[in-house]
Amino acid sequence: MKRIEKLFIMIAIPIGILYMIFMLPTYAPDESAHIWKAYEISRGIFFTNEYTTIPKDLLENQQEKLNTYNALKESLDKKTNYDDTIDVVSPAQAYPFFLYIPSAIGIAIGRALNINILYGIYIGKLFNFIIYVTLGYYIIKKLPFGKIVAFVYLLLPMIICQAISLSADSIMNSLILFYIAYILQLVYKEKPSKIDKVMCIILPILITISKIAYLPIIGLNFLLIKKEGISKKEKTIILGIGTTICIIAAIVYYMYTMSFNASIAVKEYIEATNVNSTEQIKLIITKPIIYAKAMIKTICIYGQYYLDTFIGSQLGWLDIMVNRTIVNSFIVILLFTPFLEKHKEELNKKQKIWILLLALLTIIIIITGLYITWSPVGGDLALGVQGRYFIPVIILFLLCLCMKDNYIRIKNIDKWIAIAIGVLNILVLITIFRFFI
Image (cartoon, rainbow, N blue to C red; front, side):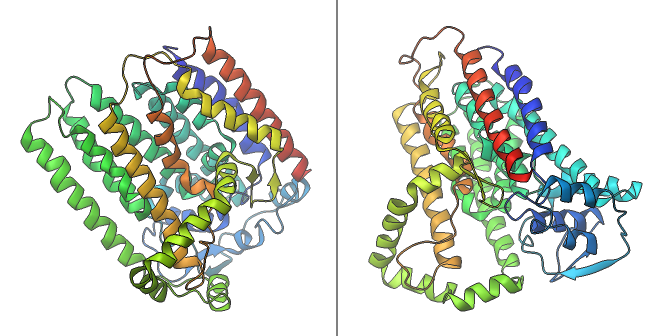
């Protein structure tokens, strides 16, 4: 158990590389748009205008065409003309540039070598995967408890698929999970260093700029409010000034992104389904009962779907269907993980209540955000929500279940868990391979 983070490396690297090989480029949700954004950043353009300039090859190599291994082979045999470009409206405009730095470096290497752009994409995917494995190692290592939870969590099919893609979610998920582990480590660390205190400000800022819906998660900083080893002045800076900066930065960046134009497909959807964010917000304020009923009905109807797609029941563009038994096996193992580990620390009741409130608030904001931007005015359901949006949040519920004096004693449990997760992922990989064959 002392070296479970090393066991993670041993499992994650081969499994992740296989996912990278078997899952075709552009086949993570919205990955084409993220590839366009990464390409733009690889050219040194960090802030998106209305249009993104990309090689025509990128427009031609999307999931509609690049959907079999034979199609991939044909595309890889062609030479990319980086000078033959086209302007497109990118749906990924709102994401901050730092989430694309690893993938942009990979694409830049491909451009510098003048090789087929798909090879550059694969290099970018590899760099994102390296970030995931590195942060995953430290997430497990830093957690004072819940190491098995994190081990299984990080090896769920959906999380791996996000990690090996060029999606901004690859870096964002790893960053938020790392922040959670970092704060929980500080709660029990005797003497936080200066770097620790600086990280308590930097990480929350990066998270809130990445996606404003995850703003409540930075409330984990308040677990340090009674922490010895941090002076009152430092707590004022971290909890007061730091939180204020995060909120202002999140709002300012969100307002900045509001100026972006939506793609033609999104505009057509909005017009066809009577989506009006301004009117929906007015309805939420003036008719909260309708809003509350919509939230409750959404969770009741789509709750199982959220859980399944969080695990990875539908991969790719939600069209790679994973066997129900495999998905259920992942769910069962994940639910048992909080009770399979012996550890010296655990959260007290107040800490658990606070963390659960932050997690629930984040989930409500995520669903409400889609209710405002993707659902008809006054609709009785929030549309467009997928389980992968909850990746940074679900782990908080599991960590609150970890108890130092109440666990199931099983010899070599970490190794048995590793074998089970490895086998299940191999079965998922077979499903992916059959889909593209």
